[in-house]
Amino acid sequence: MSRFRKVKRGVSVFVEGKWDGETLVVSQDIAFHDGGRDSETWRYKRLGDRVYEGRREGFAETSILYPDEDGLHRDYFGIMRSGPFRGMRVRYRYVMSLDGDGTLNYRGVVTKWGIRLGMVAVRAMPDAVPAALLPTGISIAA
Image (cartoon, rainbow, N blue to C red; front, side, top):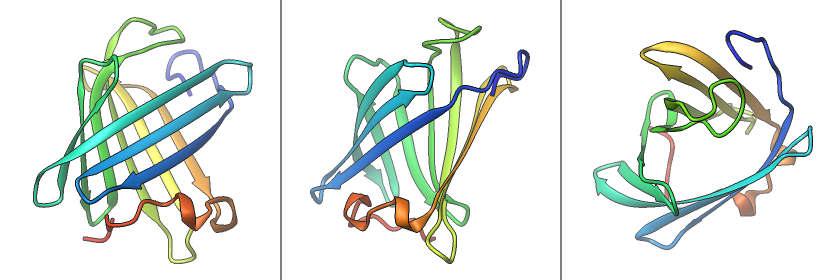
């Protein structure tokens, strides 16, 4: 949702994670309900104890991935690719967590100079997240 225009853009996202013991590859295929499509593939390498740095092909910025008591965090700067802020360098901050019943929660904000420009909140029920798609070898528990 856009903070200023109250725009909501429906989206469906298929996320696949693979861990080979050294690299976590996270692929996202994104289908916007207005017909737009996008895809991203991030490759994360371990920086230290429970901290990973990721890069995306054709993307200069890096993403940091780290777990804590709230869940698995993803934090990076990037250029807005659509909407009223297209072309603006902004900060993306997301956290993924699991409820006791297995529901995956994905919450995030997009900010510029600390001002929230947009937000995302997704809940994927256990039946909607096949176990085979969840990466193995990485725990989000602290």
